[in-house]
Length: 371
Ligand SMILES: Cc1ncc(COP(=O)(O)O)c(C=O)c1O
Image (tube, rainbow, N blue to C red):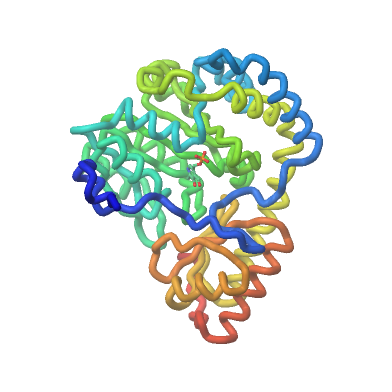
């Protein structure tokens, strides 16, 4: 049988394994920061109708520029953004891949402050962009000085900032974004996949778009909108950035069905985003409850929580899974990430944590405040 190593695959891909958060059929799935609430029935019906209306015309290619969808997304974002300053693709992963195709690539570099979203380095790899793993400071924080020093040192063509950051959950101080914009020689991408969950008063980088033609804000309908299966991500930026991305996107990359479904979902945004408050409440409950159990927990502005298990995180991960609770081991020694879902899912997660603490699978540490 032919194995991967028998193929003339690119040298830099040899020996690697693909991205793969486990997709396991267990009762409580809290490992990929999905929205635990299913689509409300009226939205299911609306999307069904919108998709059905496209079926007869599937002999034709879709609108290559997705103009109607981009106008709807711009209206949702506000901030004076219009359709020319928005671009959409199959998830914000594809958006970021297109950005690296246009602004990274062979001979160029992209920098991110780790730990951050694990796909950023993988997208760099896939596009032949050299990845620079910059560091975060104490307790996974990032100050303007720390960020500026590393951008100055490495001169990356693309800087990734993630706010709220995955896996820590914490939103970036806008001063950090401003400072990076001041010194970055190339593009600055602010990944705001979890923006809708941020606490009131958290400032989106969208607010400073008009002053920064090299700033790109990426967003997604996968999280707050509960539309992960629909695959719809987008960016907001200067229209010149959209023109650049159009040079590398595949023609007709966004199917007519996806465009129609996303537009119908956006039209029902009040119903879909209605889950954000309930999920944020569960997030805050998880933070409070874990701290009450003397575990260190990162401040979260997202729909997930990073916490220290007080032992080997892979052992704790397995012990939780054995109780039907799937969380995420992001490879940070001693830490696990759990998605905030329904109240019942939080109950199950906390009960499972209590059991592993009782049985000593993960011994509690002394309280040390936030990481
Ligand atoms: C920070 C961040 N950005 C982007 C994404 C990608 O989301 P999607 O491709 O579903 O839009 C994720 C998914 O987990 C994420 O955590």
